[in-house]
Length: 224
Image (tube, rainbow, N blue to C red):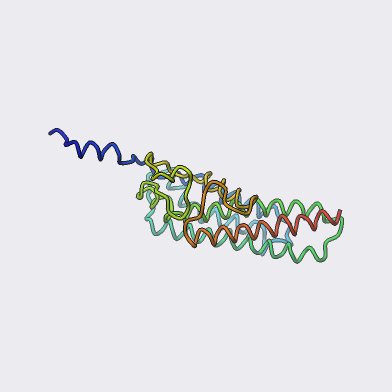
């Protein structure tokens, strides 16, 4: 049966989804955070430095198994695991930043290089932590974004300004770039927060970056 002109026109204007953005990039980001935490000095970690890495490996295992097999995790299970992982990496980051602030008062010239390295590790960790937050919060996560044809939600990427007619899908690296610009410029670049939750997350990231880069790194340089 021939299709009507209205049906043909709707088919031409309806965006074709590019699929669910792959999660393996986010899993690599989580594991990278565990490694970064493990290389921090022991006085900057809450408990053993390797503990967050072990927890992250265990909690990420279902995602890794799902990616390597035909197993499909329920949506609620994925979201629960994702937010538990976010709680772990965020707690590790904030506690390390607090410990580094207290370390400044008793630091010496011999510790300047260590402080600089620690500040750099924490700055990179800050970017990865909030890239993960943006990835999971934006539009309800990758599955919900896919179901909504990747229309703008909590963040507005340039490709979504005109309705995202090509159904372009943001991947984890796009959120890493968003977090990187927030940590360096302390403000949005080409991607803008559209909701209060997104704005709050960007403010927290900028604040942590400001503390690490301006106060902590500057203090370490002054010790030299």
